Image (cartoon, rainbow, N blue to C red; front, top):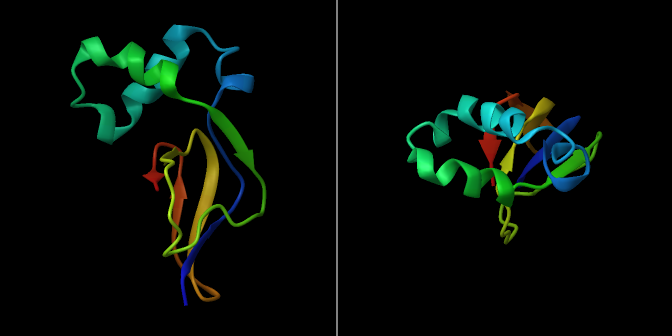
Length: 97
């Protein structure tokens, strides 16, 4: 069976994300380990490419799905399941996709 990601999560996107100041967006993204090596001149580009999506107790992606999105957890958590068995819980700053 595939892995499912479920949980209460929010991810960078225009609704609430862009109500924050640019500095708040940049500060959040700077906390994500994956982006810490990104050259500083690319930080604004990354922040402007982000969109916020809020999920609550629903499957976000299944193993084997073809996707074109990358998710960073801004607030909340997501569970990775194989079948009905929880493998790991992802939290703020974790990413997948």
